[in-house]
Image (tube, rainbow, N blue to C red; front, side):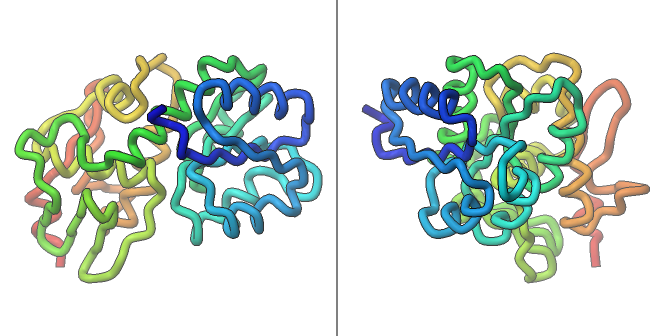
Length: 242
């Protein structure tokens, strides 16, 4: 099967939930390991380097937010967080700490599988982003360089630290200069599901990307917010960076 080689690490202390999730994912062609101890999770993620981590936030030993923050400098794989709270706070904090996506508990197996597959597809084929009609592999605007094959970006020759989800969003924007991309369009292209009108993940990632590429978060010129319309990458502003 297409997904047999993908290794998933589930960090979850609810043994019944972890085991049921493992069985469902393995039935769908994924290889799955489980870690119940938050204190050991970061070390294991960095040592084993799974293709994707499913990370619960409420764990003994160390919470999911601190684990995500700890591993991000050395782990570039997708991190999907599980949250039991029905509000934005956990999701926003998780995204700010480098998570790529989130699923609310109770976990619906089909939804979880769909989110996992979407993240893995982006990781496997990063340069096939819809919207880059000419399919350029490397784009440069002044001192800003973004390479879709290496999945790396540089500003004035210095590497920019980006999560996988942040890179995907940046690439989508820079490969569509001068074109306003709505939240709905961004959401569908990056996550493969319809925008529900409430998800804040795109806004959080934009706020994280701006200072990394030399934009002013208070008065952005490179990535503009067009109220009620979406986001716009301004190539001329990037080329004018010194």
